[in-house]
Length: 550
Image (cartoon, rainbow, N blue to C red):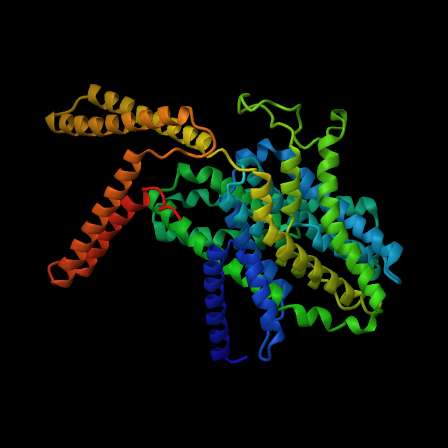
């Protein structure tokens, strides 16, 4: 493929990604489903097509996507729901793979248990990108967001390790339960160790991290370092990336500056936007590759294998969620890990039992993605004896069908389901908590000013202290008035006419200031470098204001 063709394909992909995001904002449909359909349409057109290379996906696309998701997650929240996360990301993956493997061995003519488990391992881990994007837009409760995030961060490591074991057995090297468990434990423990080594290895670079550009470069390189380090010692690279991201995100506020956080956050948002778009386009374009080898199978065999795969993907998840939630507490399998707690209980108490509506939403959040396709494409063409790998083409088709059904079907209906169930976060409660934190932060600042005033200083310091104290007290009064309004609010955050008027006036003032700066630049009175500096000041002021209503 010529360089010009590659550039044109990249430009076309970016154009489609931008158009899909715009269309998603206008229609409410998930961008992931729109991009997958766009990839399907392109696959059917004449012209060059891109075949998914599993090595590129696993070593180039997956690490930054997982790392970015880990940076956006909460180590404390995941740790508080660790039993739920382990149940979904480890046990549910294993159960789904075993169900599909048993179904293939029992009802698909000529299929083996190992080959079925390999397919099950590939399609078992959900890709939460589409579900999270929709869930945040419709206001999914924070706990469900945490569970979906935690599951998506850890289930890939379980699936890829199980896939390796199943492929080894299917190739003819034999299968040993204890050997498989040992390999899994070694890969998981090694992945955690590698992730911790990278997370704490970047700490000595904190001096470089004070420079936003250097910090950005280090952040972008970190997931690849973690993945390559783990893979070089044959442990879970996926788990290493996740652990490194969670630990770094938890500790980074202690050593990163505000400018560094703003720039790094913006960079990762762009990386997510482009990589996720490319990934979903790639999914749709795999259609020719997965149907190419289906000619040798009887239609009944394809139908049976498809029903087993898609049925297990759609049914095992809700059944598992219901059973583990309602199992006797003595079995220590209930997702919440404790008796139901009242909403007014202390936040440090174990989370309450999941409701039926929450189970329904979590069940429908199991969209599969490119990891499933990348995993199934890693299945070798031949066994150790030189024979073709059993039913490889059938496995590819079933994996593609499971991804397509969940990504387009569940992805397109996830938002309406959440709205129909009226399962939304309490925005007023979250606003109350933020205002309480703001009040505590301002009071800490006032305490520090009192300490500074007690120290030896001159009249210049006195003037500065009094000026800052007056500004802090003004902010404190505003936060307290806002908290009084929020105390009696439920659900949506109330907006007072005075508050909305103040926002409109502040935006109008910023627009006027920006127009005046541009007029000075156009008249030659202000150089472009000075304009950019002053524009950044106004941009930061505008960024602090709430988002404009849709």
